[in-house]
Image (cartoon, rainbow, N blue to C red; front, top):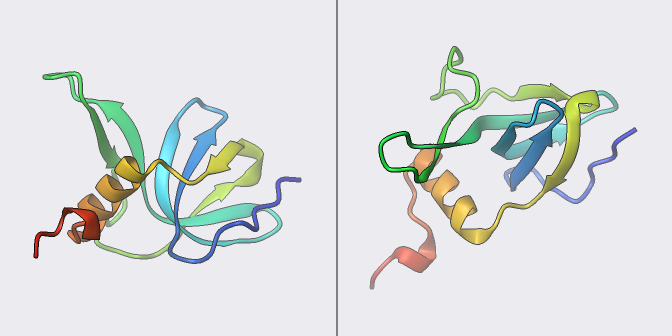
Length: 105
């Protein structure tokens, strides 16, 4: 059984699924069967310029909602914190809040 205890609510996490998809999301909680995350996004390439971009993982959910999405642990291969650039891009795209490092005083 996969145990996830290194994250606290609100942490940005990367999750690799058995389907090959790599998600970036905000960690909500975990139980014996599932990881619960908020606003999961998948990393994909922009077909026009080839640059990486984040799009909602589940297109049919209310992206303005902060209701958690459950991902069954049997489908999770790996979890970790994303690199700083990706984590900052995720937070800016899902909250509109720019990272402190990009703010000019």
